Length: 148
Image (tube, rainbow, N blue to C red; front, side):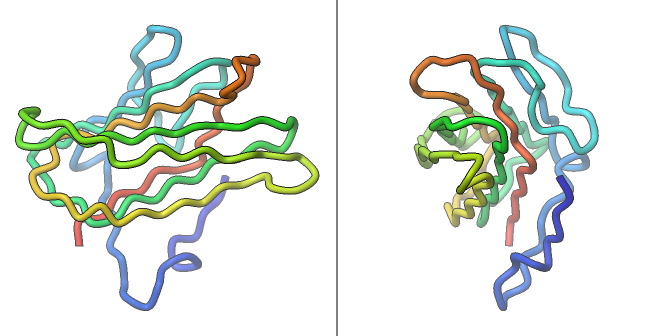
């Protein structure tokens, strides 16, 4: 999915981190851990997925943007985001969000959060593609993190 950062930026210029430079990003699906390929944020397989962003150095996180989509079926997806702080000494659930997708209506979800947390070691996103347990594929179009 193509995405133009400037289209969604507010009047203050948000500088998104290059996660490939400042973190190790992996995707866990069906018990398998895979490094993220460039531009890929989810695995094309049904079931829950976990996206892990492990920063090389503790990082201040001011903004988090998530994009997900579904154009084929009705489903309710849940995303839970956690932050690991102070080199893993603390863990905090930042949000738990559900979104209803409908091919004839809402096909894309764009969420932006401003957690403003210091010393973030890692961010984890747990994606349950269909909360009713049906086989569904999570389609995450992008994850952006800013530290200013």
